[in-house]
Length: 623
Image (tube, rainbow, N blue to C red; front, top):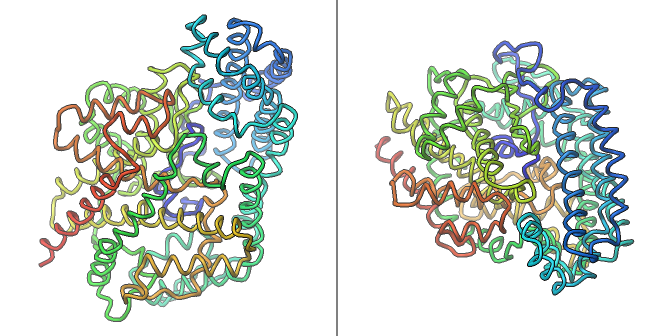
């Protein structure tokens, strides 16, 4: 999952929204990263693409050789691995070049070529797993004993493949499924085209006469934070009315996504789509269901937060869904953090991990690995791209010199140093870590940062501001993402029980969860049904059962952060060992080695305790 790791801040806004606002800092005309570390020029990339395409064609020649000997198996798997590594390098360059300016068609075409080559590689290697299974576990294990190199590089892959025997089809069928991959991925493309390119977003006028010519995702993300409650409602009403008009279209599209996932699960003989989604990580279904159960059990804590939000915003009647985004603590002069400030603070807060981590972070800051400043045409949001194993991570940011930008930079460098530690420790074949561990690496950084900013705040109001940011992070990453996960589970179970999904039905299911989480029946928050089409706005529902990992990662990060800050013996060593482990074991097992059982209630209760502790501090400061 190292290919592109999105910033939590981006995930939490639930849309890819441009951040190059009119009041953003001046931006350079070109990117600041140096992609020549990947390829000297676009022409060099094209030459490498042509050469690699020919190499991928040769992989079919290994078919039928895996069972001949340990050395033959090692040769075939090494060739496929080498091709995969180079395909990922090509894809990283193409994607980064494309994201420098999404308006340049040549760059978009290069990206499509990289995607097509990736699909071709999948087809050319689709025979490998069925052939391994036909050889059988006994012979594979004998080969591993005969060849230590085969065991070292591919032992985990072979074990994972043999584990998948009940869900792996024959070579021809696997080839058909691989070839169908692009077709089954189209709902995401349809969503992006409709949501980002074709929705007729409205123009509105705010109470002070400010005219918003186009209330698109970027404007919505900005103006939903307005201190004026009347304006917030005006923004919500106008924005969600547009999505409501296309409820049927988005419903048909998301239904297609769900059906594709159900199709894959059925043909591979999984009991349900959730089981199929969790299988690659060997993730116990108990982890997903424990997350949902503990979030529901923690709703009294969440409702305490919502009541605090209502009080601090001075709302006299019912709290509304439109009241979730303005800061509870406004600063007359919000602190400014330049990129240099963000790097300096990042080094201070992550020093808790020890000198090895600090050295890698300094090395990264010294290199030209980031495209930092916002500008027209640049890809919005933030991410870390770490799939170029033989090079180094790259980071795309849109730094606006505020606390959110500081937090995003620290978050993304958490991913980057994770990648550096992993790649320095693991061979390429064992370097592909799971999202389940990836987000813990970055959210831990955010928590260290937030605790540092609270401790070093210059005024009471500034301290309250950072405490409020910490609370909102838990709302969005734990409760909101778990609600999304519960929604995905509900809509799949709807299809699995033989029912149909429509846009209207999706809104009904989502509305029930929204009201449940936000305490509508308890009088905590009044949810306007007009806003229940929000599901249509969430791009992550097209990524499979994905978002739950943001919530579990925050839980893990809370446990690690608390232990590291308390300087508990071995805490930081266990954390660094988790990062270095990369993809050498299943993520649930890696967590257990680090001392966390994510299928048990204890880690989740620790996060809720952190949330209550923050609110206790706010209560003490606002008495």
